[in-house]
Amino acid sequence: MNHVVAGVLRGRLAEAGKLTFAEFMETVLYHPTEGYYNRPEMTIGEGGDFYTSPMVHPIFGACIARQIHQMWVVMGRPTPFFLLEMGAGVGTLAVDLLQTAERGDAGFFAALEYAIVEQGAQLREQQQARARERGVAGKMTWYETLDEVPGQGERVGVILSNELFDALPVHRLGKTEDGFVEYYTVADGDGFAEQAGPLSDPRLPEWVDAKTLAQLPAGERFTVCPAADEVIRAMGRLLAHGFVLTIDYGDRSPEVHVQHKRADGVRAYYKQKQAQPYERVGLQDLTADVDFSLLVQSGAESGLQEVGFTTQMKLLGGNGFLHKVQELRSKRFDLMADAEMYRMLNLFLPQSLGEVFKVLIQAKGVEIDGLAERLHALTFSLEE
Image (tube, rainbow, N blue to C red; front, side, top):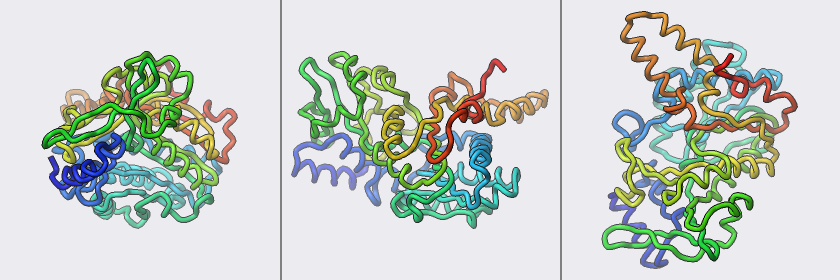
């Protein structure tokens, strides 16, 4: 347990008696110096508590680069072309994408202005070091918050996120015969526990569509994420013309809210193994399944129109992934090639990450009629 974070929580509980799970999650993940993502000891990947798709193989960043290049072409090759990554981890996706762009199309690379919004100073330093090491730091700028990004309402380009929304704080709710309850965090000896109580805000269930709420049985648990609404609206406000490309795990409603039963979609990870949320407070990751229907609905209210919803498998498959696999397969009896192909296929195969991660494409100020039939991520089929 992180004693600084635990002390902050105990102090707040001594005053308030209980905290919403969103308040708990915000504190343990984002405390300025000791939160999980902001600790000096924070590690992602090998030796860390989790890894992200860009860390599995550079093909992930290369495929994303190809998809964003196509979006640039669809938009008429604007210069400059603003590419903003939200929550970039240790910067692996950014450098792989930029290096692919530099090798692939000089005009596209010259047009790119790559920015990262990253709340944590430790992660920003890791991203900057990686960018310098790979020779692309000169193409990049960093901001702590989305509101700091200049040119609000004027930007032309793409806003990209990979595993951003799953790390935003959520409220944990349950449906009863009489309505809804909220599950709070309370003190439990030296640790913390869950306690049911009235809703902290009676409007919380409204973050889930009415049809889904009606079909949830009594006893079902689910999460709501007002923070996701705020972030997707801010993305829409930043863009004048362009796309929002969101990669994360979760699903649309109602599926995202009816598949967990008592687990309600919140998970903790420690040393790449699943744990309980109140274990190792401040020393383990917390995530929650993303309700993509909320992103669609809230995004529409800030001018973002849904272009398509698909899987990571199709995003990669539509952007050259299988060409690389075929190249490796041709290297018979090459054990290094076999190992590389195995890592790559973890990103693609349905039973691995290929269908766990979903992809939402939204657009603002772009003609979307017929666009879904053109974008590589939305046209890929294994039957072709």
